[in-house]
Image 1 (tube, each protein chain N blue to C red):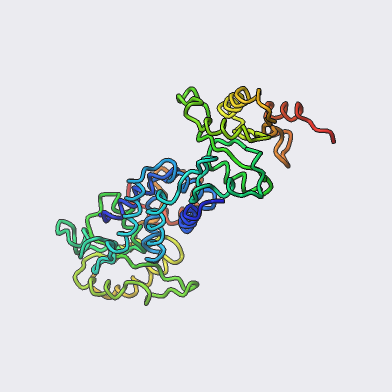
Image 2 (image 1 turned 120 degrees about the horizontal axis):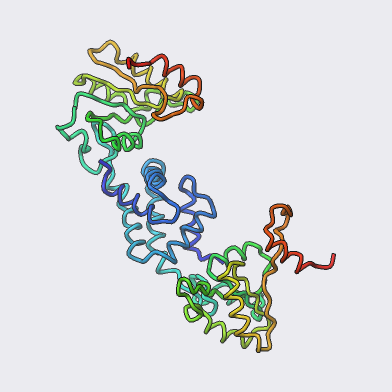
Amino acid sequence: MIPNILKKIMEDFQNLPGIGEKTAERLALFLISDMDNDQIEAFSDHLKRLKYEIKTCPVCHMLTDKDICDVCSDHDRDQETIMVVADAKDVFILEKMQSYQGTYHVLGGLIDFSRGITDKDLNIDTLSERIKHTKELIIATNGTVEGEMTAKFLKSLFEDQDLKITRLASGLPVGADLKYADELTLSKAVENRLKY
Amino acid sequence: MIPNILKKIMEDFQNLPGIGEKTAERLALFLISDMDNDQIEAFSDHLKRLKYEIKTCPVCHMLTDKDICDVCSDHDRDQETIMVVADAKDVFILEKMQSYQGTYHVLGGLIDFSRGITDKDLNIDTLSERIKHTKELIIATNGTVEGEMTAKFLKSLFEDQDLKITRLASGLPVGADLKYADELTLSKAVENRLKY
């Protein structure tokens, strides 16, 4: 009953995370009924170009459409400070702050023994190379078990070198109410308290 | 910072209903990181084919990739019963029942004076033609103001003809609790009560 090509489009949408059968149907019908040919052709064209145009920066492993990414090739940024993150999405989030002026290093994941991911699977060789010309390494992995484990691993790997290693501060979110904070966050906030 | 083509894909996703900036970013990054080239190429190809392959059936105005849709060309179905619906999505929903054996007629909307939509904007001429060879017309428009108004209009248009006109039953949803029913539904359920 449902035309074949429409079924295929619904399947394509359902392959995406968080999109179920009903949503896929709604999106496919929206394409047919509410989008004009030019918009759909453009969407199709962008998808086709996506994998060919996107590369990873050989320096920091961030997604880019240039030979070297915008951050690594920008000499107005502090090339001697590296913020280590798990993946490209983290860089997007951090860049929205518009206050950080150093560079990044995308690990491509976090150490996670339960899923068989070790330091060998991460972009650590290139980081070791970069460290030689670096003054500060900011470890910005998540505050999860895997994030902390990866942070500890990086610290142990580089702590003998002439390098300042820092970690993003743990504490209460700005504007947060004490009564909603979990005990671990609260104890971190006390431990890392600052002169006022 | 965000590569141009990735930005474009995010915009494409944001053009779809119910997809905001964060979701668009998540979907675009999923394409890059978790989907292989073949899947993306297939998605791109399906989009390109969509508008060329989908037509509307000249009989019932349902979406189809054939000259006449599967339902209208199926002589195992009762071609003398027409269920009138607002749009193609309704047909998908009704076909999932797998119990209705008649045909459909897609109006392409509902009468809605507040938005300037009158009977002239709906597929009513072709319905008038079909009515001549029809025994029962089931009006399956929504129970909204617009759905009721359109139903009344169709009834007044065809009631002089030798034709049984019916409307989908109003009442309590199957399994529903009385205390959650609104008064209008409840009074419809009492009014349309059946011998038990």
